[in-house]
Length: 593
Ligand code: SF4
Image (cartoon, rainbow, N blue to C red; front, top):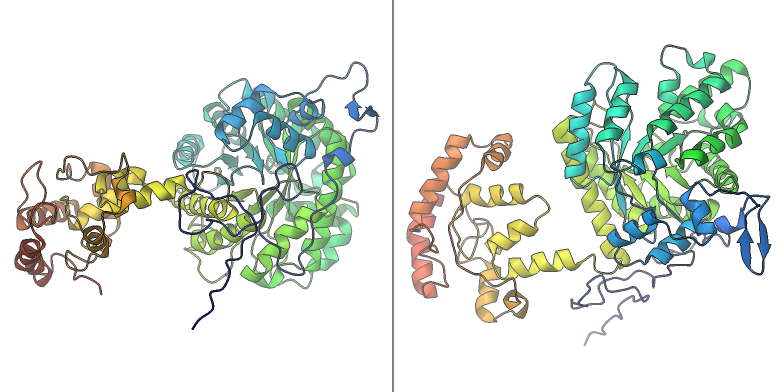
């Protein structure tokens, strides 16, 4: 007799709003919104505990605490969401964010912003235009960033604006313009003008346009930041954490410094024999960013560029400096998130996420991947979305996508789509695992449609409706109660449906209504299939028509072998007689066992 193991329950919310499911739905910790853990994974033994401090411990030195409340000096005018939150004010942006984060109230958003655990990257210039405010923080849903930008050898402004709209279409929550070539200034202005999502930049790229890095001066740095802030950029990557004393630590690395900003500033420090000017003049940078409410994305200039360099002394020394800079930015009233690695073996991801939570007092962590192996160039959207899923579960708040072109070239439109989808998967999987309320409703609804063999609903709920429908219709563009993967006799879902009238499949909205044949492949779907390199559009049409006639379906009717329409024996016979003939003829693939 076996002893049943108890489920590892830690009190997380069920991520289904209807509390559906045969288990609690999440093995994560109980939610702690308002505390240091928000939504969090249980700590593996040995992991760093959350910091006992928040942004409330790093107030501007001229504020005072009276009767338990912080009071700003007379004449103080709040500029940033953090300052409004510190004064207890719920802004319009906070209200709009709460409408999207349905599990959080506007007051909770305000309190998380005040604690420094959540940011609303919304430059006042962009907010006055088309920006739809969103938030980044572990109490909210996990966000995805898409990078784009012209390079000196590829692309231009119109291509980049098209990529921006494409990234928004495929779910990017923010976009970084990393242009290093072409008319960078015009490209940035066009992207901000066209975007509804926050735009981030790495300002040092434009600071060295037309000059060598060693000629970079403080006035150039400040002027460049002011210009981009006035344009409406919502967050800046500032590589202020790379210090002179860190540079000897990278000499043992396999691949040295892989961050462009980190490498440029390292060279500046070596040439001048001085400290990083972004670190030395950090408060002056803060003053500009505060004025426009540009959020910090404290750059990880020493992130590892390969598994062998992960969690090394250079990376961790920089992280501690980023913790110090987080405190300094909070004192200046600025919103802060912190950037993280990079390339990290799977087993080290939890440690990296939880160490940042400790060192940076819960400031949102924005991670680049991480890739969990280095040997699949061309597929790094997959190697990294595995790491990104673990990162989200263990504490990252925003995931920077990686496209199949990573390490190889500038992403094109389809690479942007592939990267976005890989990262939407990672973010959503992380949110389900963390037990964020109601995020699994989408999965449950699709499961119900699948259980009911309701193909239309199935396609409609799929993240990429066109691909789902095209893949289905490639083999059978008729409404059968099975698909070509297993065929009629082997379709376990159909058999299950026969065994029991599965309740979820009978729920309102999931019942099969009038059964119709598919409306044939759209141009977009034909393109999807053509790109697979298997069949030409003509061949697909020929195959679809052949299948339709083979199973004897008339317009608006179920397939003759549909077991709702005929008894199972006739259905099986029809399958034998007709579909199996197609298998033998090599037109439809053999059912897998
Ligand atoms: S045929 Fe197989 S893959 Fe297709 S619906 Fe049935 S069980 Fe699922």
